[in-house]
Every structure is written in structure tokens, then in C-alpha cells.
Length: 322
Length: 189
Ligand code: SF4
Ligand code: SF4
Image 1: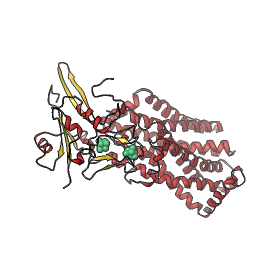
Image 2: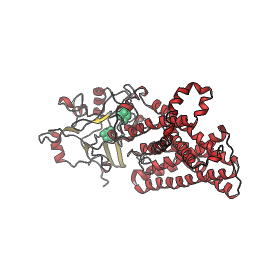
Image 3: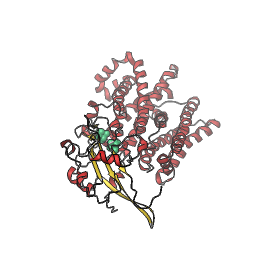
Image 4: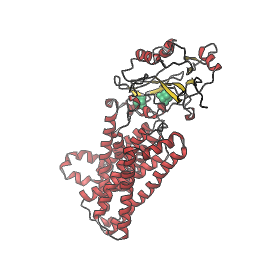
């Protein structure tokens, strides 16, 4: 293109590319996994060890610190000046959602590790990781605070899960992001991914037994979050359309144009939300409580949640309605 | 008294020659193919009822600054007299300000790796009492700049005699760059 005013390419760059989308997913699943693990831990009956419930607590304790660390590395790697990331830790701007997020993560991440250390205390002691024992010993010294650690972690997880939505919604320049629904939607879908992740990791690595009752419960749990997500997505787009102007154009473009519209309708809606719904309804109705269903269910949920993050990050930046 | 800098772009006087953009490039060492400032020429209407609009595209120096609000390190900041600048020592290049700016005014400078944008030539010219480079070179005096508190200034006179319009005024960002809308050519009002 040869405009007399020069190249337009700087305006077409996706400023927040895939590492941000993946980070948003990882932070979401990290928060969701720990929220669910704690809820299960607080509710479970002690005589049920070692059922799926116990495995889900362990899975959450593993998933949460690992995903958040990978996510943070991606985030730092995506900075134009990765080595200057420490500036984020010594300079604060309390009106910036990013600063608030950095502070939350700064506390959340070590707490997630402490929690994992407390859950796997014995395992680590007797394994190849025993060289870590001094650290574990240190973590163990906190064990009498374990209940408090759990409460703090639960609260921080909610903050981390929701802040990723606020991070985007603080941008008035991008209609799809600039919505109060986004933090709730991201928290809900993060929890949904957390349930799925805990189930998968729990089944695969902690050899838990599951019975009809727990399958039913897990499917119902998933179902409830999905039944929250669908109306939230609806509100997001209806809100954009009612705002009119650029917002409306942006919503129409994002829902109808090209690959991103496809990803939304096929990936997020049909695959990520309707398939689990279908599985839940048919399986529950026919009393066909098979582990297979649970696994397929968890996989599609996770893929759906990843695609939702990609869709919001990319379609938001591409279709700004101007 | 603190200065209240304003810039006015009179679209009736502008001829779209891009001298401002070139001056900006050489004054501020803007890398090739990147722009702090463009004047986009937009043809409106159907032949033969045409109108050519000249639209300046740059940072508009918001009073209520989305870019400063979101910047996590304080690298994006406002000077005492309200001009928005980037501190290269604090910028981590997270691009938050770029996505937050409703005017698409910012970009990452590949040489410095910092967020970059029009500065109204604050540090290199305005703080020394000169006009921004774009204002100095404009052959038709379509650009006027100065302290609007000063009733003898050009910008004060220009503001008094024209109807000023602010870009994307509905956003409530209160830009310090105003324009005088084009009245030449066919009217579509
Ligand atoms: S136009 Fe953009 S870069 Fe300039 S002050 Fe406003 S928000 Fe900041
Ligand atoms: S890119 Fe630099 S100036 Fe912009 S928000 Fe990030 S740290 Fe601040």
C-alpha cells in the first residue's frame, strides 16, 4: 500500500499476541484448580480417602503452582524488555490493574507452593525430591497455619482468576474487553477449567477410584459452571450491541467475520460449552456413569476455555469497530 | 502560572503535504516505517460531489489519560504542565498503554524497545520555548501551538475565532489537540 501518509502496518499489529492468551488461560486454570481443590478439601469426608476427592485436592495442589509459574514466564518473555521485568516489582501504580495483578501474584505464587508442599509433605520426603527436604521442613513449620494458608490462598485465587478479566476490561479502546462481564466470565471459565484439570490429573496420576456418585457429582459441578458461562457470554455480546456505535460494529464483526467467528461458534460454543452440556444431560439422564464421559468432558472443557481466551484476546484487538 | 498547552489543527488550511510528519521523523529520530504523526487524507462523497478531509493522527495529549492510568511502572506520566511523556528508564515494554490508548497513538520503538508516541516535542523543543517541529514547518500554518492561558498567544486567538472539535470527545479523555473541521468541498451535514 502506498498512501501519501505512509505505511499503516504499525496500526495493524496485534500488541498482545498468543503468550498473553495462553497466560490468561494458565492463570485462570491455576486459580480454578486451587479454588476447587480447597472446596473439595473443606467438604470431603475423611473416610472417603483415597477416592477421586482426595485425588482432586492433590491435582489442584500440583496444577496451581506449575501453571502459574509457566504463565508468568510467558508473560515476562512477552515483554519487549524481558530483563527489565524487575521494574514491575519496584515501581507501582495503584491505578493500574497490571500493578494490582503483579502484587496479587507476588503473594499468590509462593502460597500456592506452600500449599503444594503441605499436601505432598510425605511424598517429597520419601522420593527423589528428598533433596528439597530442607525447604519442605521450612514449609512444614507453617503447617499449624495450614487452615489460614488455605483461606488466604482461596481469596488470592479468586483475585487472580478475576484480575485477568479486569486487566482486559480496563481498556476503553477495545469494546469486547471494556465490559464488566469479562472478569466474571474469566473467573467462571477458569473454575470450569480447574474442575476439568483436577479431574484429569487426579484420574491419571493419583489412581483414584471413582464411583457412580462421584461421577454424577463431577458432571453436575461442571454443568453448573457452564450454565453460568453461557448467559455471561450472551450478556457480553448483548451489552456490546446495546451500547451501539463502535461497540455494536465490533460485536457484529467478531461474531460473523472469518476464522475468529468460526473459532467462537465452533470452538467455544459448540465444542467447549454445548458438548459438555450434551454429555452431562445424556449421561445423567441415562444413568450411564462412565469414566470415559468424564474424561472427554474434561478435555473439551479445557480446549473450550483455551479457545475462549484466544478468541477474546485476538478478536478484541482485531475488531475494534473503527 | 502553569502552562496550558494546546495544539489546533485547522483542517481547512491543511493540504496533506506530510511536511509535519517528515519534520517529526527527523527531529525525533523516528525509525523508518513507523510514525508518531500522520495526516491521513480521506475522500468523502460520490463524484463529482467530493470532499477531501485531512485528519491528523497522533497522540492527542489526553487530560484524562488511559495510557497513564494503566501503565504499571509509572513510565507513562504527565508533566507538570500536562503533557504526556514516556520515561525510557521505567518502561518494561508491556504494551499495556498501546492497547489502552483509544487513539492508536502509540507503538513500540524497535530501537529503544520502549513505548513511543508524539511528545509535542516536549523535552527537545517546547521546554526550551520553541514550537514542536511539526508546527514550525507547516507551510500553510494549519498547526497552531502554545499556551492558551496567554491571551496574546496565537493559539488563544485561533481558539477564540474558530469552532473547535475534539477527537472522540465522547470518550471523556479531554484531548489537548483540537481540530477545526473541514468546511471545503461538498457538505454532508
Ligand atoms: S492519545 Fe493515547 S497516548 Fe496520547 S495521551 Fe491519550 S491515551 Fe495517551
Ligand atoms: S509499555 Fe512502557 S509505557 Fe507502556 S504501559 Fe508498559 S511500561 Fe508503561
